[in-house]
Length: 276
Figure: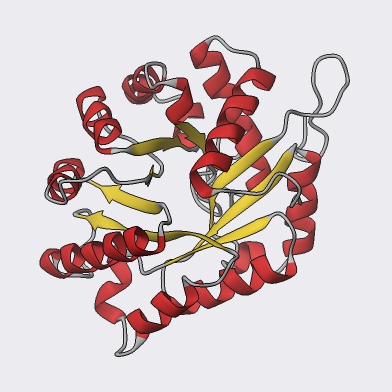
């Protein structure tokens, strides 16, 4: 089955899904965005949250959301990009956050895998994003790589619940519980579909997450699910990850879609009538 012809077993349309995390401004997607979004619609995707990693990205994803129904923007500076931020970039992010098409702050967070930004500077920028999200009453989109404990400790220090999502979650069950208790939802990406036995632990975690705290995403153009692993990902392939997650949970794809779509719409306050 190709990306553009997904249907249910009875021949009906694919279940309606929200891709909660896609980098639509990446040239691998933006150069043929109309076709990319057309394939997403055919796969059952009805809304996409377009995620920024720099102030330039923030402007671009917001522009896409202004011109494309069903697309909404998250603005912010990725931890690995914070060291490159110029004077005035943060003020620009804060201004962009006032736009009605902006539904989240981020992608922000922490990363110990790469060292492009000193860790203390990452923490300072993470705090900026958390404060802006709280002030604007918007959810925060959190990046975490090799530093789950650091994320948990920084969020605990706020001494208040944090509305948002830990995107592309890859941690343990104990870390999942800690993040859920702090207020975050958990989003799963294409790794759930990989054949690696080493990812069985992640699939076991996904099976235990409360159904009202689950999201699905592509992280396009990254993390393309099996059988497209190694190729540029795109929003329509969230249907593949959602189908695998439904299998893990013992649900039908339609049931899983209803739940994760409702969760995404609740978290990001997405309107029901603004669709791809």
